[in-house]
Length: 370
Image (cartoon, rainbow, N blue to C red):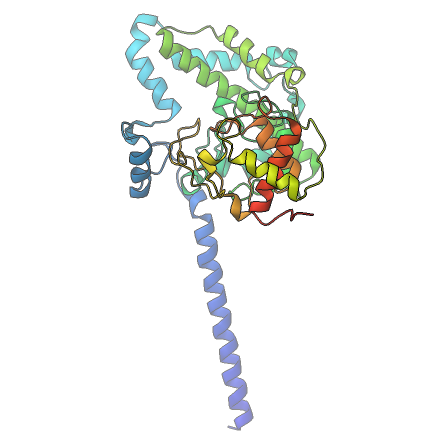
């Protein structure tokens, strides 16, 4: 056999070998990526209580037993077992009756309330189940099959709280707030941008998320009231409260309240002084004097969903809601829902908030002094 043919045979064998290796890498990679979504939903608790999680919780809340942190459905069963005999009806059935009455997709009361655009729900549900339920769960409780592998955890809509809004602290988000999150995603988290999805489909998802939040908040409030009063709560009264919270006419943006001034050395220095101020902004107590998220109270908090939460390390230049000045202004002015980061719009003047924004951007290498 000629040397040329031998070299060709060896070259062909090499190409086949490299092809097989590439195929194996793809199979393994796709398997690892899809593994979380092929597992059963997390029904034993809200957190995968690994040794790391246990150690973290022992530091933050030594008195808490993570083994008892159980889902909503288990709480219902526990309540029913304790109180059903005296009430003559189970809370679970009472909640389901209320949901059917007020928050079914064909509910006349929901249609009359003007809170939800019912026409968007079928398409929104289809998109949500395809794109979002793997993390957020089909009911929006944050317990999808991939949730236990993610940090931060996917949002649980049942409290009606969303982190990044243009409304004041504790106020429900406007539609455009949710649309912004769906479109842009959240940097440094598993929440991707859906900018390639058509605008109509994104608005459909937004409306379905609002629908799930209404249902989830109704469930949660019914349970909370039942535990507090040891009696079946008034579903009509609770639905009225929730609908008022979510009605678009009552959702007023407090951001933006002032246009951005020039980011220069003077503005950055004023922001630094506010950042280290012990009586007003007090940012350093959580974020640390150098903005690395290592302040004296950095390990003292958990969010409203019960998970440990750390302050942002500004030196990375990565911010969940976005890197632009107006994104950071919004987080400072309105706070971050469900976290210890409250609103500063009632404490600082708009100009002072912009100074803080410029200082925070300078920590991450952005917005060099002009």
